[in-house]
Image (cartoon, rainbow, N blue to C red):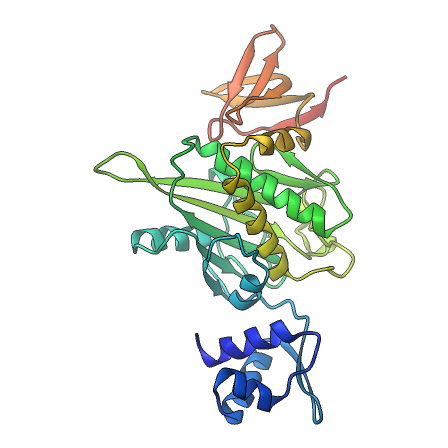
Length: 328
């Protein structure tokens, strides 16, 4: 761990109390000069650190993404994560794929302050702004207890919804299969991809990525998105940092994984559904369909009852919901 990382971790652990430079030097076995240099570097990066001649230094809550801040927000039962924080990334999904190819360990998390070429499902672009969102991807090795890719997306959606509900006064909803909504507007999109081993034909890696609108003001969205998208804190100041939300999301995710094969998360997913009971239209194999979303089955697939009373079972990646209307 670098000197700067050690100093930042100690300051964060100590907050909201002050800690003297001498005590920091003793705890970290560093010189006072090294401490001073590290603090100046952290300030240049945007971290807010108060100093007092008689008290020392204090870390003031700063919304600067950092591996140290994320780690301090993780529960003891959450696996140790290998965390990389980037100031910018073309795509954290691409970064995670490269990490997989390079043999990086499972539970490798890539987080970026901004994505320069963000893509969602079916290659759709989405809006990204520095300092206002969370863009991250996790590299996982497949859990042999379940094989359906859709389950990863569903578990991730429930984990994000739980974390957001715990930190805010708003209630999230989930649009099948991979979007989180607040007040009828999209706040988060999730993307899951599998990488298979050529020799065995088995899934060797799973990458889960997401883009979360954290504190983007409503008038900062492109005009064409203002009626469709929102952020977790579109008007008020955030009640937590992005590091804290990231930690809470992965705490919830691994909490669900640790309780498998328990399927209670699937009932949570159904209860938060943005589409069940509504009329939906979709295209499948080049044919347009319309029907009522009647169920989400045990595999996370959406069951749509068509006008002729037959059911269509839709799985992730097959379709794109083109409209959602209340059923009259």
